[in-house]
Length: 77
Image (cartoon, rainbow, N blue to C red):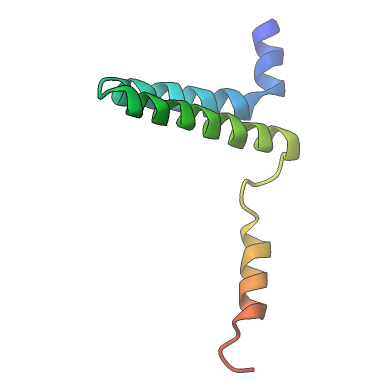
């Protein structure tokens, strides 16, 4: 039951960390600096997952971005 509650409350964080852990062994075989890159991947995966957990919406609001771009760079003003 604990795992189900953990999955429901922190799904994005768990998926971000799982993706980084999946990719880390590839980089760990290549040396120390790549291990630091692996730690960066873990941090990025956790941060994106946390953002997804807290907001609950899409990671990138493409509609808002497209609207801003279309009003900013209209070809014929």
